[in-house]
Amino acid sequence: MPAKLSVNLNAIAMLRNRRDLPWPSVTGLGQIALEAGASGLTVHPRPDQRHIRFSDLAPIRALIDDLYPAAEFNMEGFPNEQFLELVEEHQPEQVTLVPDDPAQATSDHGWDFRKSHNLLGNVVGRLKKKGFRVSLFADGDPDIEALTIAKETGADRIELYTGPYGGCYDEPERAAVLLEELGRTADLAIGLGLDVNAGHDLTVANLPPLAARISNLAEVSIGHGLTADALQYGMAETVRRFCRACGQDV
Ligand SMILES: CC(=O)[C@@H](O)[C@H](O)COP(=O)(O)O
Ligand SMILES: NCC(=O)COP(=O)(O)O
Image 1 (tube, rainbow, N blue to C red):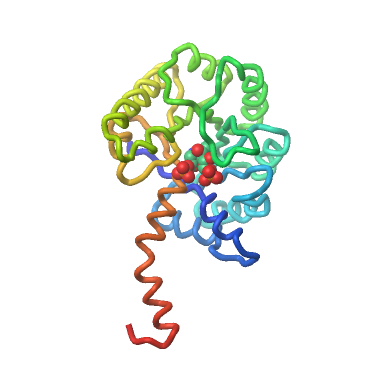
Image 2 (cartoon, rainbow, N blue to C red):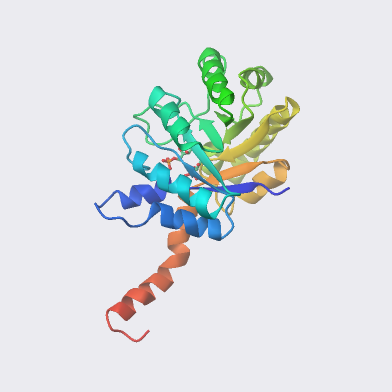
């Protein structure tokens, strides 16, 4: 089965938040993504709402429920009480727990499962009792003991943090080493009965080798690279539309 694509809307929300105007529309672009074949939408609401605003969550939930009931809503975040209440209110199909601090610019590491065993055990227990699928953000580190703890929390999946791999776009030898570590981590996780997602800085260039190495990859969530491509591949047509709006015949 090919990996499912969940489109992360954070980058679009960040662009929208530059002005007090409703475009680019987070829900509207989410709809285009689902219409084009994405299997789901991902958001990572942070406490300062610098990307996704809490008020974006209900319209995204409604978009999926009303028009794309087979699609999935994936909410990512650090499991503080505010995040857990947002999850309980908006009922995503998947909750991805990420160990990020509110001051972090973006997610840059997976959980330290040894240190966070109790926290994750409690939070995953609370979410599983309410029927959520839970995924835990994990480094590409083939550490069987750490992955066993992840499994013991009751989580369903891990999401491999692919940032270091994505950052090696101009260092193919280093990328190959990191790819193999991600692959070995996935093999161990799958062996323990965890499903495997992946995300962070994935692109159309680095995704095919990852999907080939992890043949059971369940889902990738992609925002930054996908939004960059949407701008690049949409720019020419958009400039033509604006030239026409100027009265030019192009
Ligand atoms: C967990 C993860 O890797 C992504 O959610 C990442 O944090 C994207 O969020 P930003 O685009 O807001 O950095
Ligand atoms: N979980 C990773 C994600 O949602 C997207 O990360 P990025 O593609 O914006 O780096």
